[in-house]
Image 1 (cartoon, rainbow, N blue to C red):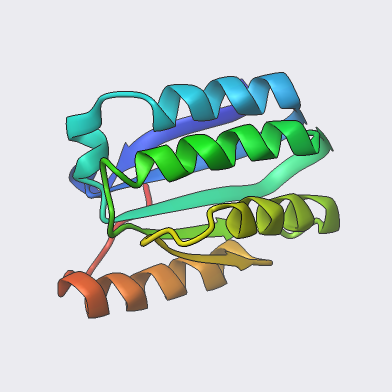
Image 2 (cartoon, helix red, strand yellow; image 1 turned 90 degrees about the horizontal axis):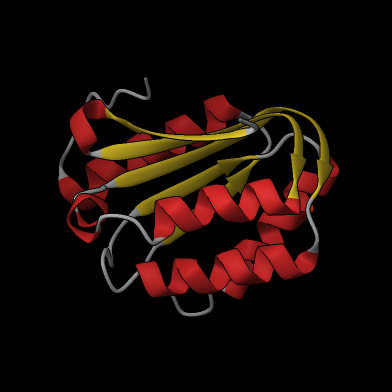
Length: 140
């Protein structure tokens, strides 16, 4: 599966990993399942990291990004204060991620797009400690 979503750090966060060739349909289905899944589990997330560094080819259109952004806005009703980072080294994925971020509008999620996973993890650690007083996060 090109997009995998797993809980990490005992359910305090989630990791979304893209790999290989990712299409709009695969992206939409994975994110629909994640964002519209179990509300109680989703409400417990302090952070989310999307890592697209292993994606080799992407064919995701703007309609797919807008659909996922709408589901993300809806998901903020289940979890209003999550720290969300995206690692997007490739230009196209970075641009699509920025489009998603801008489409969130006035979300209460604290979001940021990065070029490297290391930078994204460092930012999440800093923000989660500031917001929730939680340290020693695990991303696996």
